[in-house]
Image 1 (tube, rainbow over the protein chains, first blue to last red):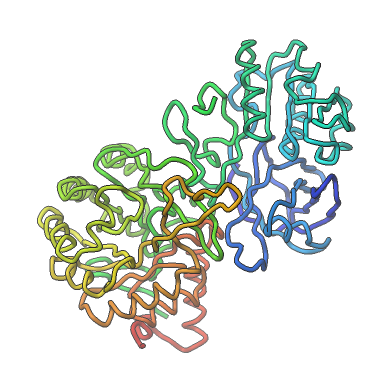
Image 2 (image 1 turned 120 degrees about the horizontal axis):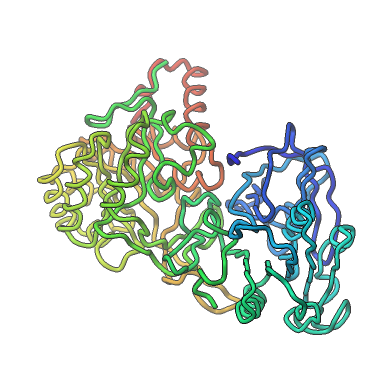
Length: 258
Length: 300
């Protein structure tokens, strides 16, 4: 899919967790096809001193109504400005960017586990939809420090698949880290994960020990999002690769961070 | 109305180019528009051998700008000539290769290999990269060394030789004159401004290299000042860059004496920035009854 820059109109802006907003954006024409795990670069409008776009995962899309859905956590000036915007205002996106999930597999996994950490769970909704379309039965496991930091529970639970939770304080699901969740013990043919780096490392470790195919989605600091500035690189077995263009999804075997 | 400008032997359909290090090898933006719409494109800094660049983190956002410390990651001149050049040589614009190195020999070697590419009418000699340990800015902060490397490359390179200058000096005019005296056909300025950012939570520098190059709107007034000073002092054409994001920004540089401009960091924010600026320049000329953009160049 060709990359483009488009002014979307904010159709809805709802709180969907602690410091987390769900932004529903309407494409003025026809929403082009996006892959699960791809991301957008959001222009932060009129925000003193904030220059660079903010890379945000695509959470969901609706081709019939030309809607794109983002989950945005308020972590700084830029994301606070964007989540303070009102319905009817315009948000400029550069998209769709990066290689999505599932691009390293020859065949779609039939019994995959999707592991999200906090806001990192965002892209897994579209991944699950993609898998369900092909008859695959994913299990979703989302972890966070506490219940409030698990975003958009409603969207995941409405998929009709097994959704499990881990919280460090035990306020939702099992107490502890995702790697200690009982769902981890089941038999899977793939593990796909997105979240904080220490969590992804731990999850990738489990997958590699058990010989399960794995994909991780990285979130390095980015400028262009297009593979031009070479700022967001990660070390791989083939040298530096741009997370924005050659990722964000990699297999852990190719990364040097394990 | 005429937007054409000439830089030595280069004929530009408009005075807008892209800046090295922000435009890859000319392909990253082709989904958005045809690079042939621009006066020129300056490609990623190219060295004798492939370079991995510096460790991550290499970027820090700062107020109205960013620091980078990429460190000249590139595929090397041989891969550029063999693999990359054939995929872009058809572009109907001035393809300019930014040539970098850590020794005079390396600069000359890369320049000579690029000289053999028929559709690259110019190189931009990068004696101003702040992010490499050897060479780079070291050549551009000393007039004698600047003259030495420019003279050496001049001997092996016959086409248009643009020399890119750093603002991290006491007198940029002195370096500019040295480069001109040694045979530069044009000067481009400014490269990034040496800067630093600290992560107060971690109590550590943000960049893996501690210092990096500052770019974006925050450096524009420095760049306009440098262009104005240099354009007054030299006879060769000056290409202005540093924080240009709009047509008004570009006009500032043209009025201050730049014959053409380069758009850099703005590409990261608005992928359409260079073509938007071309359109904005045409609109400005039309609204102000300017028949030829050259009329406003250096009017200050």
